Amino acid sequence: MGRHKAILLAIIMLVGGTCGARQADAQTFKTYRCADGTQFIVGFYDYDKRAFLQIDGEPVTLAKRLTVSGARYSGAGITLVIGKTGTTTVKHLKRPVTACAVI
Image 1 (cartoon, rainbow, N blue to C red):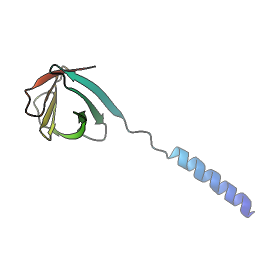
Image 2 (cartoon, one colour; image 1 turned 90 degrees about the vertical axis):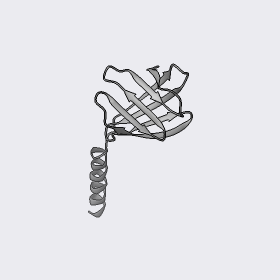
Image 3 (tube, rainbow, N blue to C red; image 1 turned 30 degrees about the horizontal axis):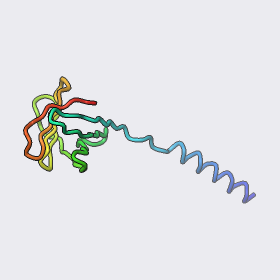
Image 4 (spheres, rainbow, N blue to C red; image 1 turned 60 degrees about the vertical axis):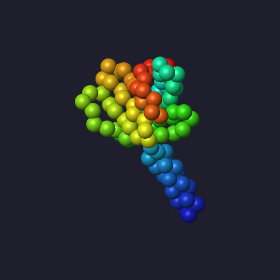
């Protein structure tokens, strides 16, 4: 009788574990190339308002800032602006603002 209870408990735990497994968080990654030759990757997660950037080989987390239209993220001397129409600009390392496009 004890063996049957152990098997039943194992099956219940297995079923409960697979049903309770969390789906992967939704995420979006885009690669951009700018007019000045800069190339970067930006990642967005549904649960987080920040932008996660890989630029010049370094990871940078940008906080979302207030803006009139579109979205603006900044931090560590980098500013990323994504307009409502999809136009994207980046400013980093004391370089001028540069237009970028998804590749």
